[in-house]
Amino acid sequence: MEQKPPFPPFTKETAKQKVQMAEDAWNTRDPDKVCMAYTIDTEWRNRSEFVNGREEVREFLRRKWDNELDYKLKKELWSFDGNRIAVRFEYECHDASGQWYRSYGNENWEFDENGLMKKRFASINDLPINEEDRRL
Image (cartoon, rainbow, N blue to C red; front, side):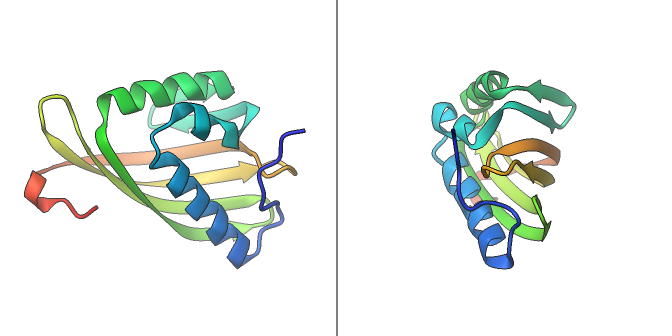
């Protein structure tokens, strides 16, 4: 059985650890690695796109990082309760033309008993920035 500690119910310490682990994993930009933190039947809403299942997550992340170049992410714990965690985040990346963006958002996560994320709902806003205005 797949497991991804720490497990719910979360404490402040373990919720922060889970958030840091997610940040570290996403910053690898490795879809094969990142998708393993999610249940086989995970449900996502990312902006207006709905993604269902680990394999769709893998494909979503491949597309994402093929287009969002030099991606760098920072996550921050917002709240937690039981098997749920809320985070705020920002990331920066550029497209193939060299235009940089800073994206801001919030995510709501729900985990199964094995510490795998079964639901992820993300609301994200993008802001074009100049390269010299990057913070991450």
